[in-house]
Length: 315
Image (cartoon, rainbow, N blue to C red; front, side, top):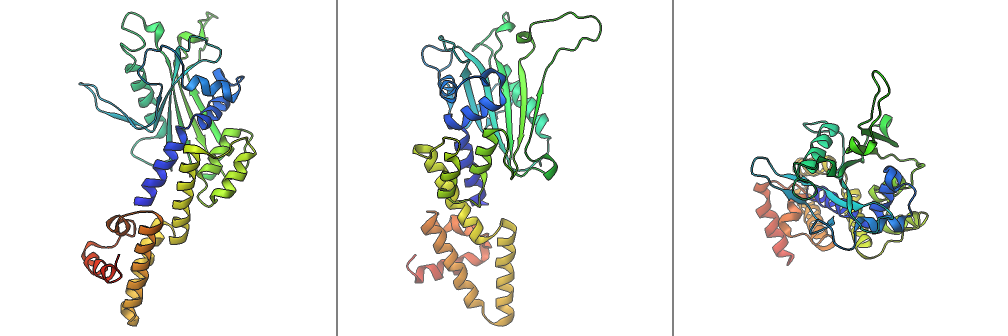
C-alpha cells in the first residue's frame, strides 16, 4: 500500500544519513571499530581527489551494463579508512532495508549477488584486468526489521577466511578478504550494540517523534536537519497506520463495515466514515484524493460515488 511504500522510503533515506551510517560501521566493521564516530563520518565523505564522481549515493543507484540487468541499491556508500590522509576509497558498503525474510530469493543469495555486482562495477574505476590486487573490499549489510523471534537481536557475518587443510602456508588477509555480508536482525530488547538500539528506535512505528528523540539522546544523537525531517515523517505515517490499523485489517474492516451497513441500512454512515478517512489523508499526509483512495483500497467502481460526496463537501 501507499503508506508502506512511503515508510520504506523514509527509512532508506535515514540509512543514508552519515551519523547513522557511522554507528553501523563502528559496530560491525573491524576497520572502523577503534575510531570515533566523528572520524568515521569523515571517511564516508572523503575530501580531496578520489577516483569517483561522488562518494555518498543519496538516492537509488542504477547500474546498467550492456550485457547485464540493472541493480538498484537502497544505499551505496564509498568509504576511506580512518587516518588515511589521502582519503583513498577502500570500501564499498551496500545497505539494504528488509522488512521480512520473504521473497523469491534468500537474503544471503541476494547479498552475494549485490556484492558480486559491486566488484564487477569497479572495472576501470578502481582496477583494470591487469591489477586485481586493487579490487576494493565490498560489504553488503542487510537490516531485517520483522525478524523471527529466534533471530531477533542477532547479527550474522559471512566472509572469506583462510583454512589450512594440509600444512600451514599463510597468505595476507588483504588478498582474500574482499567480500563480506552482515545481517542485522532487529528485536525489541536492548542490545549491547549501540547501532542495533538506534535502528530499533528509528524503526519503531509505535513510538512518537518526541519519545524517539528522547531515546536517541541516550546515544548522543539529536534529531535535526534532514534526519529530523525523515524521522518526523516516519512518525506521522506510523501514527496514521496505528490509527487505521494494519493493511490487512484496514481492508477487511472497510469491507466489513460496508457489508454491515448494507445489512443494517446504515450505508450512508459507512460512506461518511470513509469520506472522513479520505479527508484525513489529504490533510495530514498531503496525499491527493486518488492516492488516498489507493491507500484505503477503495474499489474502482465505488470511487465515483466518493468523488461526488467529496465534491459536496468542497474537497
